[in-house]
Structure formats: C-alpha cells, structure tokens
Image 1 (cartoon, rainbow, N blue to C red):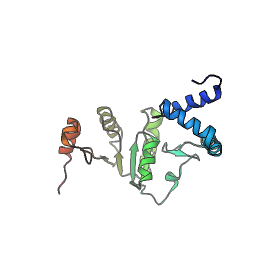
Image 2: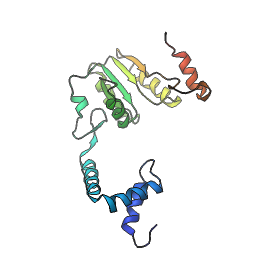
Image 3: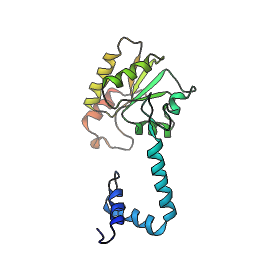
Image 4: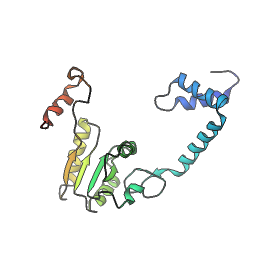
Length: 189
C-alpha cells in the first residue's frame, strides 16, 4: 500500500478483485491507467458503468442481454428444435464466439421450480433435442438424469456433449474418469 494515495490503493484493490488478477498485475493496470493512458481509463470507466446499467439476464433463457429477451431467443433463423443447456451465460458466449451452435440456449443455474417451469415452457415451443453442455461431473450427471425424468413425457431426444481425452494430452496425464468416458464414446475412424 502506498501511503497518502488512498484513491490509487482503492483502484489497485478493485483490480485485485477481478478473476486471475494478482497484486502485481493490479498495480501495473493502475499505474498504466492513471499515469500513461487517462483517456483509456475514462473509456473503461464509462464502459463499465454503461454495462452495469444496461446488461441483464434474458427473461427467457438466462443469457446476457440489453433487452428483456435476448437477440438469440428472438432470432428466427436459429434452429428452434435444438436447445443447449449450459451452466452460465459465459458458456453461451464461448459457443457463440466460435459459432459452434445454431440452436437456442437455456442457462440452468439452479433447480428452483421457477427455473424448471421456464425450461418446460421452452420445451413446449417445439424443442425436439435437448443438448446438455455441462461441465463433466457426477453432480451434473445426476442433474441430467433429474431433468430427463422431469421431462420424460415430452417427445425429446436427450444428448450431451462428448467427453474424453483433450487434444495434445498424453494418456498418462488424463484422469481415469475422462479416459473411461473416452473409451465408452469412441468413434469409427
């Protein structure tokens, strides 16, 4: 902490609260913005304030949006029969950034009745396939089984993203659960 520079110290502390930002990086960011690039600092400040005021969760799917319903939900060109279940709005961002999925999404952040009711309403809109894109874990496997049971009376195909050995990783460095899943999900060459 720099004595006599309370505002600077508060800026460093604010940066330190960001994910993956340690003390050294926080000090570097603060020095750069305060001493070298005040224009960018003001733009950053305005962008943060604007985002906080205008971004919210889509009422329908839980994605980030500047409106009540997000652009993905409103886009009629998307495949309305496929619904990808994800854990967070960040997951949607990753899939969209790489143009990996053309259907609709649903953020399953909890198992509250309200969330399940929203999911069931979306299913009634013509969904034929529900794709689970969740982090592989026993808890999420149980969650998938719970949702499949809850929606078993609908004509749905339930699928989940493949799991296994990541590209470039030697088998000796792969955990046994991932290796087991990779062997189970093997494909023809």
